[in-house]
Length: 337
Image 1 (cartoon, rainbow, N blue to C red):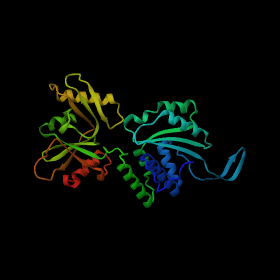
Image 2 (cartoon, rainbow, N blue to C red):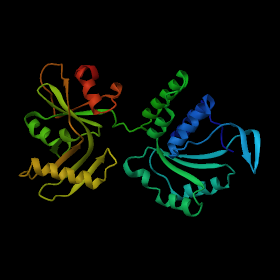
Image 3 (cartoon, helix red, strand yellow):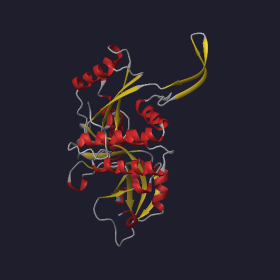
Image 4 (tube, rainbow, N blue to C red):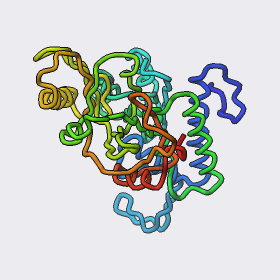
């Protein structure tokens, strides 16, 4: 038998602690209202019809030609959760869970793979999905879920203040354990200087593909700076390194979207050719979403030192690039330092 989940688990292994806390949150949702757990699980497994959890009361229910005046039922479900801090899942282990889960008598059977997935990692379970389709005739539901998706599923607008605060604490734990994508909510401010006109016209930022001053951390947003202020911002769709020379090798450093890698590489090549036809040095191309005008002023003396500067914009809680642009206009650099 497994251990009871507890606020004081005593687990030494980070994965065990994370699983314990995740289960605690799900249990608290159920204790507050079974519909909250139903909504969360339906979101995680992609069941748009809603997973029914809790006691169901019906009247005048038809059964084999007769009508029952009152009917009380409680559908059963079994959910197995395998937690990894990174995408280190093994088919053999998951296949064992499928065998055990299939033996359960529950109406609904679900296997969740919970991890800090990046990009296309969630698509790496082709074999498991095929086994479920062929061997188990789709009797089992499988879902690969990021910690970010898990958090979004349990953060619901109808939570009580106490449970909402508990889930905020859970978010802090996930952040502290580096289980949420820490590139989100960060603005990479780049010093565009005399090249800003060309960069804005093409909606791209390009620098040498080198380390040191030109090495950039992954961020959600990019800001173009000149003349004492960030004046244009955009979402970073991806970053591509292109070797020197026409037709040089291209490497996708990161993809912040669900766009195919080749699409981002093609966009990067096109931007590079338009701006630097005669250059023979390796370039780092930031493929951007639509540029949006803003005015995020550097309020300290002098211009920007160096080629880049990072600002956390998490607390601004932007709902999109237009919203972020508006909120940055109401702030100066020292407000977010």
